[in-house]
Length: 174
Image (cartoon, rainbow, N blue to C red; front, side):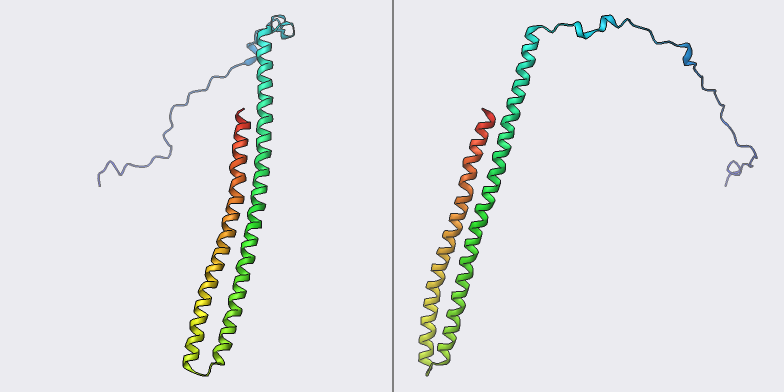
């Protein structure tokens, strides 16, 4: 280490020169006094053209607000209608799916009972083939029914949205 690093400590810290901050006596400064008569706006007359323009602007703002309020109400109604339509469609779809599951389960139990009563291997194979064919046909019919319900729900939900959104946009821009 160098000797400069081992400088002896002093008891008094080195202080920077302190400069006094100037103080101001604000009582010596007075705000200028203005005659309030030149600034009396109660006697100022607004030109008719400016008043007309202000009235038009206020009327346009009121009209715009009314249109936006009507559009918001229409949108709220649209959301409520869409939700209830979609809910009803999903309810129908789920009921149909549950009914299909019940029918399929009953068919499976009936098939198992028939298999237990079979007298030969040939009869079991015949019962199994007939069951598989009937099951395939049933699944196809159930799939068509569920697909039709889903398509109807989608159409019933989307069509009013398209119509109302178009109507709301026309109302808002008119």
